Length: 191
Image (cartoon, rainbow, N blue to C red; front, side, top):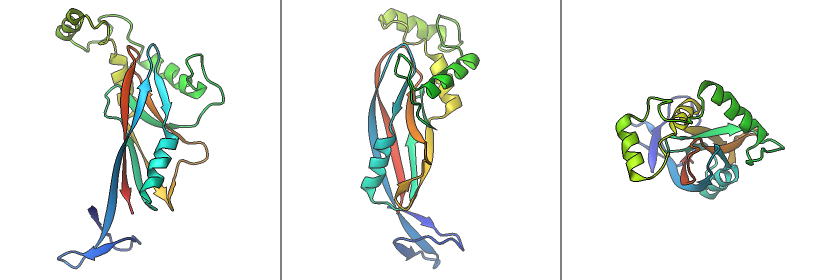
């Protein structure tokens, strides 16, 4: 359990107590859960985690709060976007492919050694000596993740995750050099 001091004039509800100064304290519940995602190779992967996020929120029984969907992976993002009716050959929704195309104009896909300063030569030599291939050619993924962000926060009001009519939550793996098993963290605080 965590607690939050109630500012004057705000109508917070829930289990309450008073602190040693007589101020009203509202007890908030916290819930954490992870969603597993499998990502692809040779193109960014978009995984629609909307139904998982809604299911997790509903399972907590919280009526009001804030849900944060977060990626701890430094080559990934979490975004809110509407779905497209059609997908590309790689099963990427068209609106997401438009995003990939736009980002590629400012952050070109890493295709060869030395295109970006990161990683430095010592890391490149270690990777090549290990026989793991070109897994370090993912600087573009790190930069795209920074620009797009690694989390979104969404209000829960009256038990409903507030995504609007067309909003979907997508986990995006910008790393195109190998398939991976990834996790998305869902953190909810509320009552």
